[in-house]
Length: 309
Image 1 (cartoon, rainbow, N blue to C red):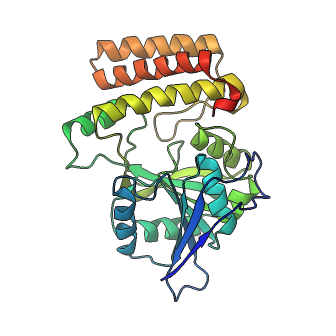
Image 2: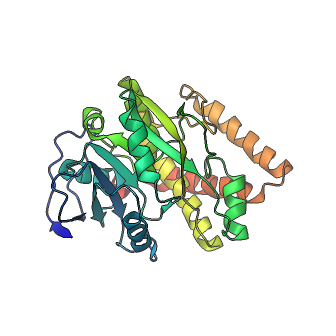
């Protein structure tokens, strides 16, 4: 195994929206016999462990039927977008695959299928996979994933244009990633919508691939659930307050087109409608997530300064 650590600032001349120097370090893992990998797997992480989930992901990658890859781990960068951009700058693969550090691979031929499919379609700029609820998940995790939009995405039987391609598992031709200017390093939240929009604006498709899936779970405990959705609200407020041009609408189903940006009044009434609907349909975890998000948003919008994030 060839392994090296890169320290100091990583130059990122391709980035459209840069933000300072990287605060992390880069570790590159590659088997000795791989001189130039076909795929570069990029994994940003806060502490290189994620409660044991990142080492588990490494073990799952060792079991993949496709092995022509390098793994680039960016440790400790406070900006996910900047971390991924640093990884892309040193990557040598034709394709970039991103994983979150808590992603669980669904099956041993996941990478092989992803690579084979995108190789056959030069018009694809970003391809994601289904995110399924694991059978052995706790009651809490299952309920959260089933109640909250975009916490799961179903399997498809053909390549389909979809806004559900996301960082926990997606593949992007490195050439296209550099062409669009990489990730947005300025915003702390909303990276997936931004990248998808930039890729679509360049004329490439954003899709979900058939016959591949992962498990990307919400927080396992109620306390972490509360903390995450409150923070999501605060970070959303930050983006809306200081960088509203990067606020992009989301869809909840494969095949749906991303709508134009709505006015603030429309979004407020839509949010109130969702609150009422979730209350009437007794989707209690979804209701709680909306309340937590709204609380974080209001407090964040009132209190946050641009220099706070």
